[in-house]
Image (cartoon, rainbow, N blue to C red; front, side, top):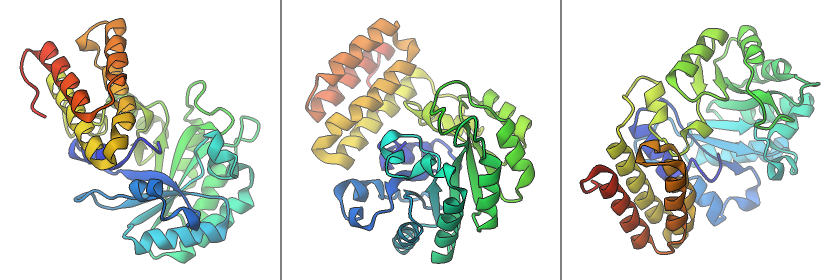
Length: 310
């Protein structure tokens, strides 16, 4: 979710009732700490606590140093990503690529735990591949080396996001560990969340892709809010775009296009799929922030018959 769950997105998710949010994944490499991308991805949101950051890397010393920098920068929790299947991450021997080397995983976690006084958590998958489904072993290692919680995505690294997530491995991990276990993968509603909680006994669920264009979903699944009506969803979309413009500056015009696409793809009450994709194309052709906001306001007026609040 790097490049997606930025400060504006997390602020909305928190306001709608998310119980916990984690910052975007950032590289553990020290030479990247002061880059503009890293600076933006490390931005915190006033009022959100604890401050949880997420790092990726394949070297124990580099991970330890990164954990220390983030703690000194105000992090309350440092999460190590062993779950990302993105090629550009795995090519650098990070993310889910590390699941093939259990000893290295152990050294990385141990180094991070020793480096900082705040909790270290980890994200993993059910294994490296269907033939090497070693998620239970990896989770046990994480606990033994001092991790304070484990998030498990119910696919292997080789599966990426293909097929359906499975929860037998997640349940086996929960039965083995005494620290909190959090399930992730294909959870798109409160009904699916309850099914996973019942089937696995996990302590919580994590929502990722299902929240794209729907920052209210986490609070909705948690039972904190009812699903917003179409007018509130449109208002939230406009508020999100405005916040993105302010956060990213001129680059926000480009960055917010993907978010608007996700919102409009899910706002089925607005019209047919063909009509909504026509609006997406029109929005993507706009290259000025005021024009983007004006266009979204016009869509809102057309859909609801009244001006949008944001």
